[in-house]
Length: 339
Image (cartoon, rainbow, N blue to C red):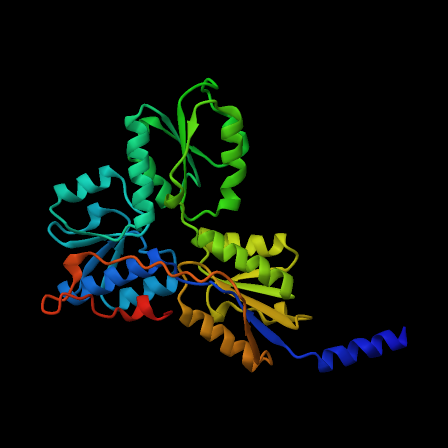
């Protein structure tokens, strides 16, 4: 027993503490585009620029844009008539667009292009007379917007049990769509249940699927294998960040959500020689750097980077936001800080 305790002390004293950074992590292409749109709108129109809902689900991003003159509102009805209003990355329903038009708002649409594709699929499926089974969280803003394309034909599914409770004949023509901020892993069971039950079921085209959430979750699985503790940077209302914590725990690691470095509980580090760090798709790289610096102060001064998927997707900005002289989109510092 004494030799085992001695060996444990030697290990604690000699094993170097390290950080493993997930790759990919942080901003996805849709988030970077949405933030950049608000920054350019502020440059062009000047403050205030109104933003319906949080542009992305991250408190740091919202706070920084607020400092620059963005006003975040829950409804387009709170925006003064004729003012500039940005729709968030999560998209809006046709009813919201009609309301904004009635108020003569100067609308700039920051909906993620992949979310817009899902909206177009919903319109097509409804036109074909299919019942749309939307796999996602019923209270998520993206789901609210997509469902609004055909509310009378859309049912939100969260679990396999929801599929079993559907009051539809098994030969009913149905189509499924998924919330883009969910990974393929998260939606697979519900989609499989739909395919088992219904004989006439179709889904979206493959290129309509967003792989950002899946890529980040795969990287977290790697972190869980290599780390004693996994820290995921993201806000509490970021569904993809919360899910990344759950994935790390499911794969055997202790894991916590860290909105920013001020939320780091140093007691979590007890017994942890390797700390994995990732960030949700709406979390800026600045927050990662701040956490890495704090951990370095605590002795974690060896940093490794995981070997994950390299994301090269870039979504173009609306042409109306280009510089009138050069015709180019100028740099947007907050959106591009992770590049």
